[in-house]
Length: 324
Image 1 (cartoon, rainbow, N blue to C red):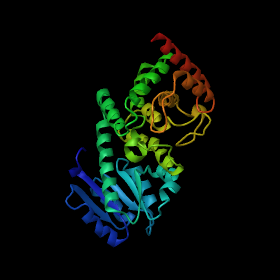
Image 2: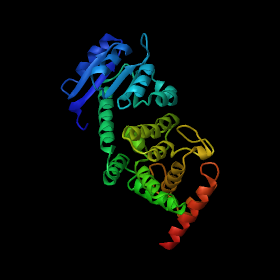
Image 3: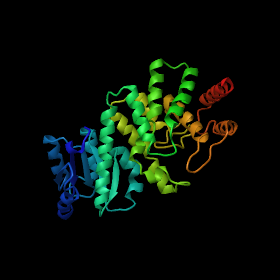
Image 4: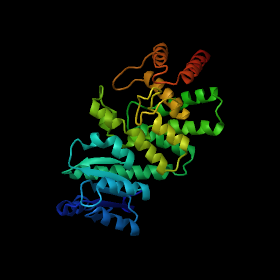
């Protein structure tokens, strides 16, 4: 699936005026619009049509929108799911619960604006295209996808390549199997693929994000893991994408797991990413020196990072520094 002409979008809303207005929003665009006034009616369309994207309001008679999208996730996991809600703060209130259960792509508020609906569909089409390319892609194509994702964030050029290098240095020191090292390399490239769903204004924000902005950013590992799952990538790659922001003491995100609950591949890539962020310039900070980075990493021993892995990683970094 690579072009909008093949995209079928289902809107579920019990307000007839809103349903009727949908046609005008997509008039002249190569998107097939299907409409349903209840969750039960929506499911009848799945029996005879491929549905690429579904929008649903939550509060309806009978099955709610959340219940509908949860069932769609279970029965039609390749369909992109978007919730529409009249509560402006619903996104933040429900993010962990509903996004985990329904693996939502977006939550948009009602009354919706035409631009919001159009942008959500455009973003979903981009997600479908990337997922299609990821399926059965060879390494060069996966690397190209990682680079295209990097281009959305002006401050991360070369980030994935550097993370891969640091992660593989640690994987070599641990004498991990060759196939696992290959998957760590791919996971390093794609670790932030969920950021394709984030607004560029957040990625390139000058200064520290506020609490609400950061809560949105915290969703990218879940979005990325969903992409990787739909693309049929390996469990190791999915684990890296989903868990690379978890912390050894359980204070990380998105799930707050801790210790050895965090897959070793995610612990490796998370450590490599932290080091690269420290030693690279970002919108909110300047790069730090090697010595300062080592001091900061050491201070995270046992809280953010696995102590044993960190000790080996620091040895690897020192060996690389003195050999160049």
